[in-house]
Amino acid sequence: MGDTLFVVARGVVAITVTVDGAQRFLHDCREGDFFGELGLLTNFRRSATATATLDCELLAVHRPVIAELVAESPEVLRTLLRFFRDRLIARVITISPLFEGLSAEAARGWPSASSSSSSSRAPRSSRSRCARRGST
Image (tube, rainbow, N blue to C red; front, top):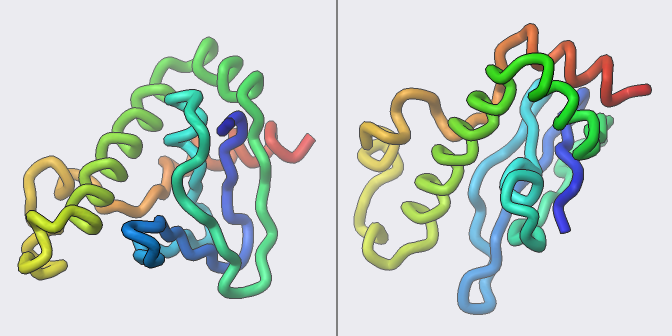
């Protein structure tokens, strides 16, 4: 179960999924990016693999901390849900045979995914607050 959100404090983490027995690259998470929001928000088993491609330092932000942040500031939930939506769209475009012929540039131009890239960089105030809370 996904009960933790991870923030990359240092390094690079590659996010991949297995489709028909083959690993498919989704995106890299770099300093300030986060991952794990799909499992955290849906309470389902994690469906992607996170692999450090450079030495990493990660901050683990557990579900009770996220719940407290959302209670204090509903904008945190809206930010997580926006990234959740964008990640789901990016994943469908990446793994669905329907979009195989679509170039990466064309896929990024889709309206739902263009409001913010598939990067999970949170607004600076949310990011520093998560990092501070998640590190204690």
